[in-house]
Each structure stands twice: as C-alpha cells, then as structure tokens.
Image (tube, rainbow, N blue to C red):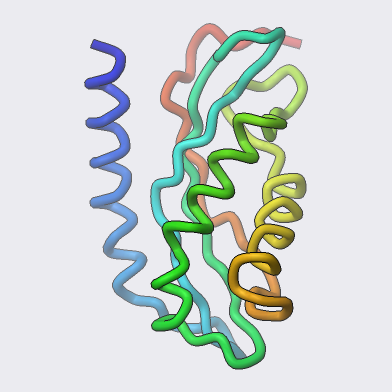
Length: 139
C-alpha cells in the first residue's frame, strides 16, 4: 500500500510540475532546465523516515542548451538519487525538508562529470513536498 502511495504522489507531483517544466523560460540572463519530481529519502538513525519530492531548476552555462541537457537528465537524476541514498540530505530534527546546500553541491559535482565542467552554473530548488508530514520529531 505504501508503494502505491509513493507512485501516486510522484505521479501527481510530476503532473503539477510538468506545467512548470513546459514553461522553461530562462530567468534574466541564461537558459535553464527544469527537473520535476525527484524523490529523495530522509534517513535518520539508520532507518528510512520519509521521502521528499524535490523539483529543481538547473541554470545552464557555456555551450549547454536545454535540448542537449534533456538527454542527460536521466543520468543527473540517477546520480542525485544515488547520492541521496549514500549520504542523505537530512536537515537535523526535520524529516520534511532536505538540506538544499548539500543537494546543490552534490548535483553540481555530478553535473560537471556527466555534462562537462561549466554546463550547469547553478542549481535552484524550486519546491519540496514531503510524503509524510506527521511522525516528525519535535525540537
């Protein structure tokens, strides 16, 4: 039943974010690529506590275009999910958010390897949607 809930939540988030992905207008000065609905685990104390679905915008630089980066999007998603399982992007005492600085730094390193140095200049976290909002420890 939980697996079904995850699939439904990911599908709904992708449907909502696809409207945002369709309008990939570059913010004042460069091109960008939207990555909607990436599910990242929240692991605390060696246990899976929650999932947070993140929508990202990659700001492109150099000779990278949205068309060339779209072909590499699956590799970037894979690298991000693998990094999220290896060293979770956990905010201490909050299982409903991820550490945006750690996520951006990890994705920038992966993008340099996958797409080439300078292809991605900045990673912007557009939204975070936790799967579960209850059962979170209080400070």
